[in-house]
Length: 349
Image (cartoon, rainbow, N blue to C red):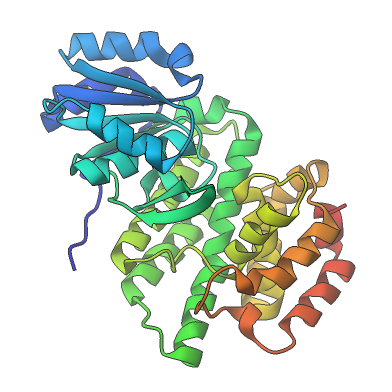
């Protein structure tokens, strides 16, 4: 199995000012740029100056307004043959859209996230709309990742807390993966689990968890990046997605007003950690408080009744996918936890 990892990696303040230089170093002098909605207006002047100073030619440009797979195929037909790389700038939709287009055209993608609400900016997967339904499709991991930590730091805090919540998942997802091995014989890639664990530990044990601390933002970005690479190594989303993701996907379908993916999975991770045992539970209980995720969710709570329905519906979200929710009496135990745990009461209404 071929394993790819990003060759170009820049996570630093003001990285966007040097994007042209980074592309030239890779030999990508003729590029396509795909922006997220509203992103071009915010950053075009910076990008234009950087491209001009490094003699980078933009031969195709598009604004990704959706993640519709039919529109993505249309884009592949419009892309000039002279394009050497696709530069994706924006949030999840633009990055997923670009990764899919790059995968179809066998073109390298340079991921330039302007928010870090989950690990998608560095993963080998794209969430696409297929016949009106969201589907996670295998694509290619970005050839390059450029993250301007100043841009991330200045983004609305809900995006950063969503990214933090998505990091919590790696504690519970690895447990679920190993449980599946014990119950079904599913193969576990040990190296992928080590990468994920180290990424989460780096975040957990970093001392100054202040969102105004650019170094802390870099730690969050780096940790999410490594979980994306773990998925590439594993050949699946297993290292980063378990029972907590099933609950989040179910909540998306059930709730009248779903929240951000990372916020939902963060809360769900804490809930399922109770079922997984004291080690997962105590670790997440500690970091949820220290990272201020708990305080943020107290002001932006999930709907308790919708969440409980999502827990019951979650095992049906993915066939042949063993998790802690597949265990006998797990639903009853987690329902009791939702009703009585002090933190769950704070994060739900």
